[in-house]
Length: 302
Image 1: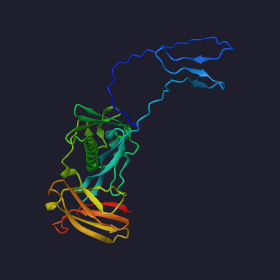
Image 2: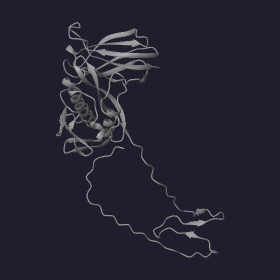
Image 3: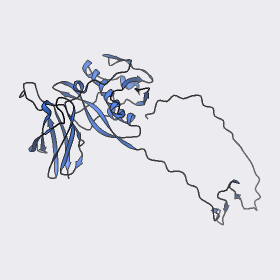
Image 4: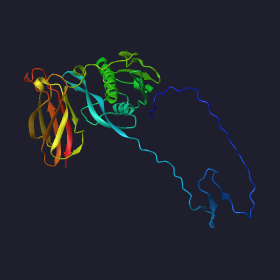
């Protein structure tokens, strides 16, 4: 179970146990009286069950508030023509959003095109803001990963982008602890013993990203698709395929700015059914630069 990292000062506890024994006359009905400050007075009724006298105010236990949910960006990894990159999903987490984001990152994505290389047995022991540095404490299973140097570097950025994104503090540094101690050497390829900053998104993220709808979502028509992309001249081609792989709709949309991550949105009318929405980089090279980066979401239209 995840827990917050806390600094505890000395705590003094004093327990006083009072035991009183009173002889009860078998012929006398037992009574229970409230304190002199007021409250209910209970007496035994004919059935032996206590009854509350008129005017008494019954007491109830306070209701426990259910833990709230929050939507946070969680990053995973994906292969692209530019190498291993980060891709994200907007996920609902319960309780502490930073702990929930890291737990979701470790557990893995909804989109089958994404993956995570963190050991799924890893436990999140806590996440703390230490004077502007986000400190993540993971269990020893976090040391287990079968990755090369590129994959290891991207695991670091995966955690950094997830935590800073969930915190809404993209400029914050992140320090990793394992079982409460600085992580040090990891995965046979790198050392993480000081705070690390998020790298430029253009260097680590896939260049086209659908944020909504979520993978596997049940939606209605018209369907609105939104996300971020960093594409040539802000031009973003899209298409929709039915469950047989046949293109049923296609078009272009624009991001708000070219050559940097900027938002996009478009709407498409669809009949009921299962569809895959696809966005892709605009490729002015005509394929000379390799396969353009593509992101997809499969949804069911009701």
